Length: 578
Image 1 (spheres, rainbow, N blue to C red):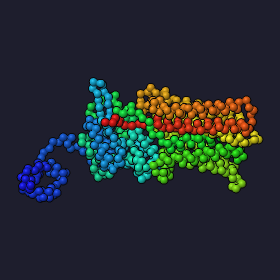
Image 2: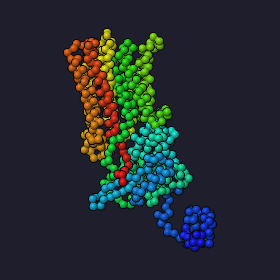
Image 3: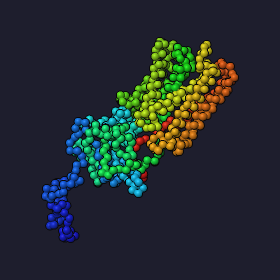
Image 4: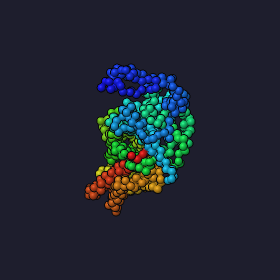
């Protein structure tokens, strides 16, 4: 065997090196261990043999110097060279130790052109390390940082609380939630490799050298992106000013579209956020309707019914705040949500809860404890107005939390109107029930919470607000013929298609609970003299009122579910399974 091996020809690694034919197999292996590295071999070969000086053979995949003032690193993608092999995806997954279904780089597909000359173009994309990153701006825990020298937008895993707000805000679907770890993670351009002059994993793995890292001027990028020049089929670059540069030596057809453009599916419902929004708006509605109906807080201490209203507002507000922690991947670190109050509406929403809930609790408890803890009326008045202000701020901040994502279905005027009407519907329904269950109130003077006139008043208010709420929700269907799948048209078609059963249940709850049953109460009270409700009348009213309240609550929960499911997110060009 040894003789045969010794006599057989052995291949050489490079023209200037090779194996000694006289060595035995063992010596051959020993010599192989002492050979030069591939880089050193190539260096010797380069010195000994003249090689073509084509840029393709010697171009650098990373900058040789760090960015200067007003500059930063950016990905540079040669579309003509991308074959869609996904070697970049695999390398990124392996180098960063990602979990099985976790990806930080994706490969999509664009198609278009005339039928006689169809066009297919693969697109590789990761984090664009934007000049104005939405993920960094909205993060309540300050778990993002943008390096002032390199411009790389990095995620700080240890700081993250797993609220996933950055996922809602990023137009390019870059941050990915890791349920196992309870945090969000994303591409950081392999900055630990760039620090030692090594290219990112995706850059090094691409067999066509379609990806590289370059240095760009931020001002030039901002000007270009505000003009809308980025990539066909991608979200509007003016939203965050992405720095990734996509190049092609061939003019791309103007009608290029993402291969998954019409693959519209319902979004995640976020159950804890649904409960938090509905309960907080119920609490706000109770506080403000109580204030608008009473016009004075002088009788708060002597009115059991008004204390019930404020107490329920405190209970529902507390439940909303507690429920919101269910959305966090790391709820024990939820206190960090206050850190981003300068830029994040989510942090401001948390602060507003911190004002509304304690103030309403104190306002509900202190008047009944005047014998034990005497409190000046001015303090109770101040707490009452603090609770009102906190409720209004919660509602306003909640609307802006979703407006900041810039999703068309969550436009601020429409979203704010929906939230206000939810507060009015649930607030009036709850006070109507309390009026029927607690008819005592103030016996000496008129109060809207005491008599049959009050029942008719709140029942009519509930019908009006329910009708307005249904109209505000139906407005989206005027866009149903719009062709943009990620806009209001896509949301309208989703509501009329896959989400139609949910929509039907929501409308049924509103019609029965918000229109039919209040009309029944108005009819039952018609012809009766205005005065306190008798026990017999109360027994007939209670089942109707309780059913009414339950249907209104379920209807608003269904509406808020559709609010999340129909809010289609922006995304980079994707591809159909293949």
